[in-house]
Length: 339
Ligand code: NAD
Ligand code: WQD
Image 1: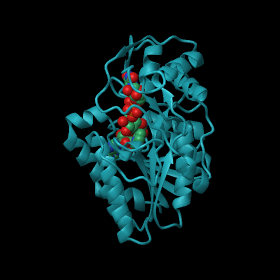
Image 2: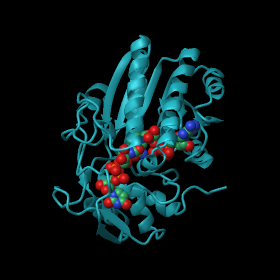
Image 3: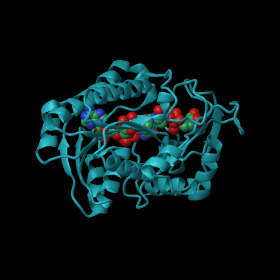
């Protein structure tokens, strides 16, 4: 199949591009590099030994998107193109609603014009909201989100569901990611956050490599086994392979399907620090600080549906996640070369 990745130069998109190429699919990327680098795509091509077609464009630009969909026939779309920093979304809600909702509407409208009927969407465990019991199951309703980023995901799921209700030929697969971490085992592609990392694993890696002095653990008094929050961390290559299964599954189907993509096992912040130290052989200096507003004590996936229906499950361990995150960070201490 020929698959269009909107936002395909980013962290999850680049790893998914590689997994698709390795599975024998062709890849076309539309990205404006607002949070990524062309170097990521170049390295994907190098690792796959195959080329990727790239359209440098804003996914909110209908003529550019339509061109990327009609130059050569496209069989499916995976929609990664979004802004994703939770704290920034609280400060700049309109930018988040504008970018994330508009990219989704534009993709759906252009797909309609190009006759493409298969879309996979990067959703998030955050849509379960603040009050859902753990583990999260796909059959639970979407809940109240604690920030505009989360609301954009919830709203985009609703938009995609409504589009599928109106077009009986459309297939929509909503993938709710838990906490993606790690990097491709080569250490050539990985997560390269702009500025101070918001997420735990890149923060730990940057402390380990000496870019930052100290990790602050956000809260040590949660009602969890060691007092720190617990999350369901998933290796980004397992996640990437989940997308290959999802887009293949969506081809020739209709209607909406929802899948949790997580490992189904929670680890605490302190467990993550210890696992990273063991895998890297480097100590990570940390202090226990205040809780971060909006953090839930713990959540993890019930990941059985993806296993049953897609035939997908995680195969990489916590040690693999930490080893590969470190391999990427130590080989690319400042991330991708900046032009
Ligand atoms: P990322 O920022 O690395 O990738 C997003 C890509 O989209 C970037 O390459 C960026 O340049 C591009 N982009 C954004 N807006 C665009 C626009 N208007 N036009 C063209 N390109 C645009 O993020 P990621 O971690 O790879 O996440 C991919 C998707 O998965 C996002 O939608 C994110 O919300 C979602 N998600 C991520 C996580 C996570 O923890 N990383 C968890 C759940 C869901
Ligand atoms: C993990 C744990 C922090 C940084 C977020 C979004 C979610 C999804 C994934 C993406 C928490 C703790 C973190 C630090 C810390 N988003 N932590 N010190 O918050 O589970 O999920 O990213 O698109 O929607 O909400 O992930 O990596 O930020 O935090 O102690 O410097 O690490 O408190 O317990 P989170 P995270």
